[in-house]
Image (cartoon, rainbow, N blue to C red; front, side):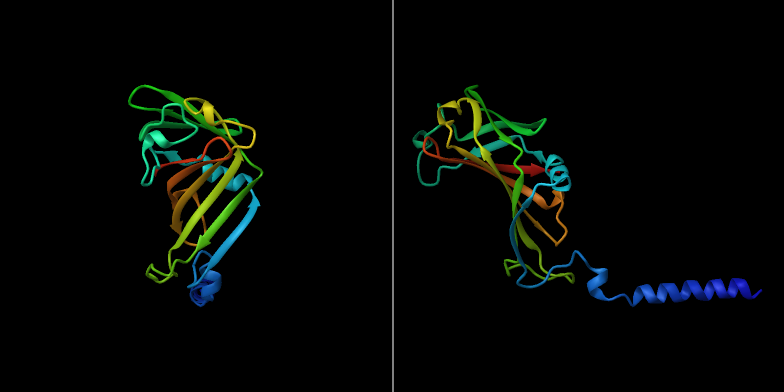
Length: 199
């Protein structure tokens, strides 16, 4: 008769002790005011898996600022918007673009060995009990590769950078990212494309 009572008391004690666990231990993903993490780290299998789980929206926009689309260098027939499809082919992300006039081209990014991580409390978001929401960026850069309308801007010193943008807590996963930006930089071409990520 005492055995069931002892088991019940043991279970009650375990539940009580779990309830007394320190907040630091219970909330590994919580954030803190002023938190900041800027680093370049190895692109390990975990981060690669999260990146490969992302789905790109079907529209890409060419950034022009105050200028005109025709002034963009490095694209044979620049357009304001494109239909977009994205696919990982072995160790390379291939982005395929098509404009309204049916001009096509691809930009591809080889998987780099490292990734740049930027996570910061912008101090303009409310704390909902587990710390503020961080603004996040993951950046992957590699020598540029492209075809079609993007071929004029491809050269040895051209660098293509994919920036994944979003927000969340201290435990980052693919669902944190909501937008992307693709930056081409170098002596022959400098332009930016951007769009949304979809769930």
